[in-house]
Length: 317
Image 1 (tube, rainbow, N blue to C red):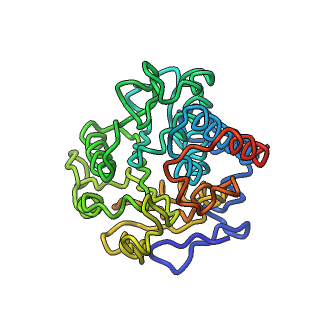
Image 2 (image 1 turned 90 degrees about the vertical axis):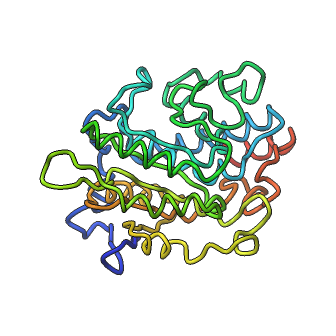
Image 3 (image 1 turned 135 degrees about the horizontal axis):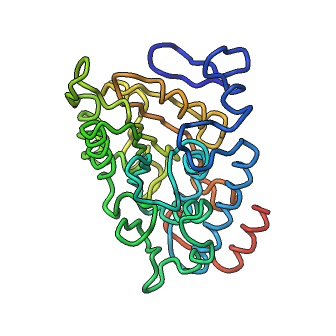
């Protein structure tokens, strides 16, 4: 397994590596100071499957929602909530928490499932998805849902928001980190690339040795190759995607977004990057884990029928 990044052809995370090796990173839970719940790899894999089951079940019950792009980013979100982020479900407003900004807000079922598994609210609450009066609406709403950092709906805005939060952290001299989850179809939006220019450009003078760049910022692109109207290559070709982020000045890492070893390795490497933000381009499969949803654009924003829910849950058992 290899993770390619800027500055070398490949950064290998095999057992032979003496620093940042996958073996070192995953032999024990990742011990980030203040982290609420670091879990080892095997336990995260179990949680990832549970999250997939939640996604299918609650969208099916609601009769509407976005299963495809929720299922494609499960390993990314599982790794963040259960290994990488410094956060506290008992204190969602903790000022020193790491922030996960969800720009692809239609993946709300994924975020809600992850938050519930963490303990931000009871699992039973997931069954209220998209119902009147529920705190779990169709797109993430920071005014309703504990643990949600940004209200979303219109695509393309999350990275700009994340840059603002990262700059605020620098100004306040706090050491929290900011992670922004984007969709690859969302990268059709011009605002994403304005933000991509801004991320490496801005710095904050904090009275130290020099201006502080936003190396506390990580953008993760869920590169599942599909959007609501079809294949990205046909709607608006965004390739070469990783090279674009490199050209804009981001330390860029390419991974298999369903391989927890690679996902965790990329996040751990990003923490060591200094002087620039990091972009992780995660190759994923839309609808991952459910055979009839995988690479099927029909399930971008369509709920499974009761029969399809039963079939999907059997596959995820």
